[in-house]
Length: 360
Image 1 (cartoon, one colour):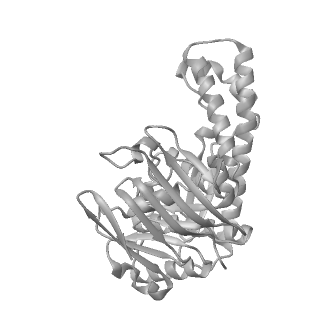
Image 2 (cartoon, one colour; image 1 turned 45 degrees about the vertical axis):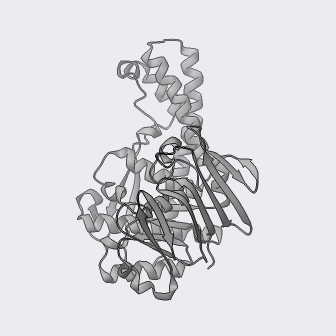
C-alpha cells in the first residue's frame, strides 16, 4: 500500500537548523545522531504540517532559532490523497503561525484534510500514570486523524467555556448569558464526545483484526456522564461559581486502558509494557486510517527503537513496511536500525556551535 509521504522538507531558522533540506523517497527514514544534535527538531517540523502546535506543543515564537529570532519557516512537498501539494508554514517576529497550501492562504484545519501525521515521543511514556489532561490530548490527536473537523469542535467548546469561566469568576448571575454559552458548549461537546467514541471504535476494530507483536489495549472513555450537557451545566452553576471554573463536560473526560492479555490496568503495568501499549495504539491508528483512506499516515517515532528489544524492534519495522508508511524515526546509533536494511533511508545529524547539519 502506498502511503502519504513527504518528498522534500526545507527548514529555515527552525530551532537548531539554520538551513536544511531533506529529500525523501517514501521509505521509512532513520535519523541518527547524538543527543542534542537536532534530530527531534526535524520530527517537530513535520508535526507542524498538521493542525495544532506540534509534538512539543510549542508557541510559534519559541521555535525560532536563537539568537537571531528572525522567525522560522517550513516548506514541504507532500504526496497526499491522490494529489501532490506544496505546504508552507511559518511565523515571523512573534506573530502567530501562518499556513499556505499550493500558494494559497489556508487554515491549520486544512492541513488535516490533505494529510495525516501521527507521533510518539518519549514525553508520552508516562501517559498512563500522569494526569488525565495528557490522555485527553493523546485521544484527541488520534480522533483528529479520523475526523479533521474535531479540532474546530474543540476550539468552539473551549472558547465558550472560557467565556463562561469568566462569568463565573466575576460572579455574574445573568441567566441569559449563561444559557447562550452553555448551549454552544452542549452542541460542540456532543460533537467532541461522538468523535472520540467513533475513534475508539475504529481503534478497537483495528487491534482486534491485527496480527501484531504488540499487546492489545482495551480503551474506554470515562467521565462523559452528562446526557444533556446544557441542563447539567445549568444545574451546576452554583458549584462552578464557587470553584471559579466549569467542573463538568468533555474537558474533564479521561481515557482508561487495559492490557488485554493480562486484564491489567495500564497504569499498573511495567514501563516496558506501557511503552508497548502506546506503540500498539499508534500502529492501530495507522492501520485504521490506511483502511479508511487507502493510504497509511506519516508516522513520527522519536527514540522509539531504544526502548525495544531486538525482536520487538524488528517486528515494529516489519509492521511499518507492511503498512507502506513513511515513518521518520530517530536514534543515537545506526545499529538500532540494522534490521531495516535497504528498506529505509538514513540521515545523520551533527551539531557544531549550535547549528545542526544534515547529511545522507
